[in-house]
Length: 298
Ligand SMILES: [Zn+2]
Image (cartoon, rainbow, N blue to C red):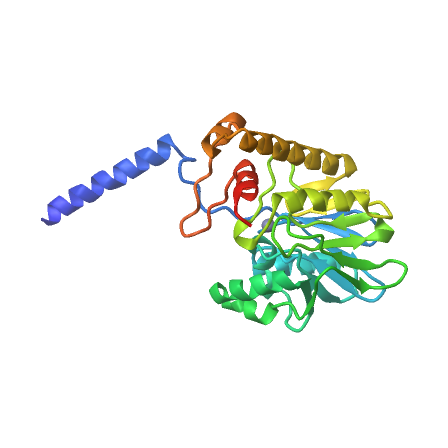
């Protein structure tokens, strides 16, 4: 028996070694997140890419620093705080949360407790629900909320929070920095792929297009758009996304009116569904989302 086991083990070790030699990249070890990088947008506004989770930003006011979003791990959030310290001695007093997705909020425990945490009211409700699964978030539930617009920092270089209706989720916040001609829009911009609409958080593709239009109509005009998953973008990028989404909405609407089925519409767009992660919500494609919005009973 012992000899059998030893033989068996030997075979297993050999075959594992052979497999590893043949396909060294077949099963990569869990990767460390990319290093944090800080990109100055203006003298006061910085984009933080890398680490675990989405891009974040920070704005240096006269006396204090406003962080925008919180990365996905406490370690990455702590790294972000260390990067902020390299740029300014002003304290971080406030974290603005653009929406409740984990890649934007799960790093909150890396911030000191007791800061002002600001979000849209619906985002707060979603975060209360998220904290049931991630209890360390319970100390970081937003303690300041708003519904349409909040002038968070008045003065010549203001920080303004605005909500333009349901889009990526129903609790999205756009952070406006009018003096910088810039905005941080969370997940309201994607490049090279369709935007994700969280139907389980009451997001809306039609609301998304309206929000993009509202962003383009702001005065003073926003010239630089920072977001969770792209490099800084300009007005032409926002216009292109709005037009592409509106075009898809018009085509789906036409096909629905012509009595086409969802399967036919998806085939016409060449949509390939992504399977849901285990236990997670299914993320329908943009085309299916549009179809569901057009056909669901209100
Ligand atoms: Zn998101």
